[in-house]
Structure formats: C-alpha cells, structure tokens
Image (cartoon, rainbow, N blue to C red):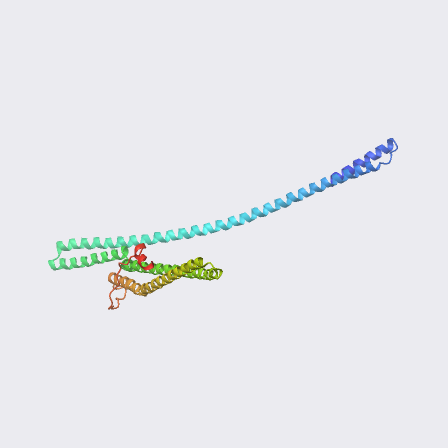
Length: 309
C-alpha cells in the first residue's frame, strides 16, 4: 500500500511539471488502458506481498504451536521415565534390604554355631562325660535346625512338590494329547468321507438322469454306460459312508477315555506332591481302579489305512 501511494505522488508531480512546461494533451484510450493496467499490476503485487506476509506469519504460528505441543509431550515422557526410574530404584533398594536381612540371619546362625562349638570345646576340657553328652546333643539339634533352615531357604517344599507332581502327571498328559489328536483325526477323516459320499451321490444322480434322457433319445449304449457308472458311484458312496460311521464309532470309544486320563493325571500329581510335602497337602483319596496305560501312540498312515479304505 505504501508503494501505491508513492507511485501516485510521483505521477502527480510528473503531471504538474509537464503542465508547467507545455500544455498536456489528453491521454488516448490506449494510454489510459496501459496506465490502468500498470496501476492494477502494482496493486496485485502489493496484495501478493501482503498475502505472503500473512502466510509466513500463519506458518510461523503453526510451527510455534507444534513446538509447544512437542515440548509438552517431551515433558510427559520425561515425567514417566522419572517415575519408572524411581520405581526401579525402589525395587532395587528393597531387594538389597532383603539380601542384607538374609545375610544377617546366616551370619547369626553361623555365629551361634561357632559359639556352640567353642562352648563344646571348653566343656570337654572342664566338665564330666554326661555334661559333654548333653552339649553334643544340644549341638546336634542346633546343627539339624540349621540344615532344615537351609533346606527351606534353598528348596521350597511347595515348589518342589508341585514340580514333582507335574513330572508324575506328564505321561498321562502326553497320552491324553495323543488320544485327543486321534479323535480329531478320526472325526476329520469321517467328515471327509461323508463329503466324498455326498459328492458321489450327487454325480451319480446326475448320470442317472442323463442316462434316462439318452435312453429316451435312442442312445441305448451311452445310457447303459452312464447308468453303470452311476451304480458304481453309488456303491462307492455307500462304502465311504460306512467307513465314516466306523471312524465316528472309534472316535467315540477313544473320546470316552479322555476323562479317565484327566483323572489319572490329576491323581498322579496329587500323589507325588503329597509324598514330597505331607504337611502341606492333603492325603490322596483311596482309589480302587487301575491307572490307564500311558503307551498310547498316534496312528499314522498304515494304521488308518485298514479302517478308511
């Protein structure tokens, strides 16, 4: 806008000078159009400059807002990192306290043992034989207590019993997985045979209908071949259906045994955990049935061939 004002003043001064020097002829239409075009161009440049200034200002404002947003996010992340660091430091301090307490207890026990052994040496030198025997008994009880304490610290009876129970139940669980896989295979194969039988019956029905049409048209040989193929397909469908039913029955027989193996696995685990920690677990209930066999293997290729085909 300032540029337009300066150009207007310059134009007025030039017009005044020319008016003093000589009479000015009125501008032609072409000159007037040129001057108006020049003024419009100057105004357009000024508007473009203002638009660029506004765009630069808006972009700077957006960048400032993005920078402020990033700063706030960085502050939040820094706060979270600080909180996590404090939590980790607190856990480390707690672990050090527990380790120090354990070391203190061990030192106390060892100090007690050393004091007892020193007392035993002095008692042997100064006391009679029965006093020596009483000291030995006291030391033995103290030593046994220390050994039991060490076993409890190093070998948790609950964990050891649970581990032994899982190991005892493992054979039955493997057998259970094998049985479940076998039942799944039987059912999948039976479904496939049923689908094949259904497809063969559909094709056989189509062939039979085509044979009837060919017979009506006089193509007796072709009709006879189609009808023969339809009968063959129906027989195959019947065989596949029978094999599928046999597989379903076998799957049902194996499926009935699944609860038995589940109970056997639970019983074996309970028995073993009770043997390891009788004070922590209830005794095993009396069972009069024999445990199921664990030597169950997956039937592959050859073992299923006789049933399926």
